[in-house]
Image 1 (cartoon, rainbow, N blue to C red):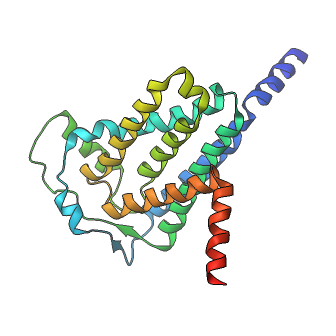
Image 2: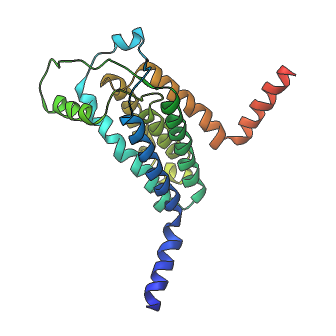
Length: 229
């Protein structure tokens, strides 16, 4: 009995930093399920002429699906491998800010698009995967793109990690390629609009200064305040 208590205490000490993330994910999924299934009124469609120019390309389902593993890898790497725990908290804080903003926007500003083609010109394993994705993921509540925001967050964290760059410099370059592919996939699969992507990238810039460069963010705010005084 005493040994089991010691074991439980040891596990709690090692992994307790994962608890806030797990609790937040439960909260996030519950709210997301609500906004996805609530009655849709006053829908705002976020379509630009640029979206019409981007062709549908089913091959991008590969990086789109890899996003799930990419984000999970990023969180688990900093939670379990990287010794500097502050980098873990920086990443999950960054992710949490963006995902919370997304929920708030979805609740107060119902949005979506109608870019998905009714008929697909080709039939292959990739188009079948896209059809399966579209059946479970609607084209509503798309602003800002969490696929884009979270992918950039993970790459941002990996690029900031000094120990990773020293041991595996190729990993950061591979991360950049995958991140760009994921961002592109959201538009080529007609999952998101250009507005969704740009808004997510602007959020990434703001969150970078808040999370990784707080002193720089403070200076920017101070300078802006002085200009208006």
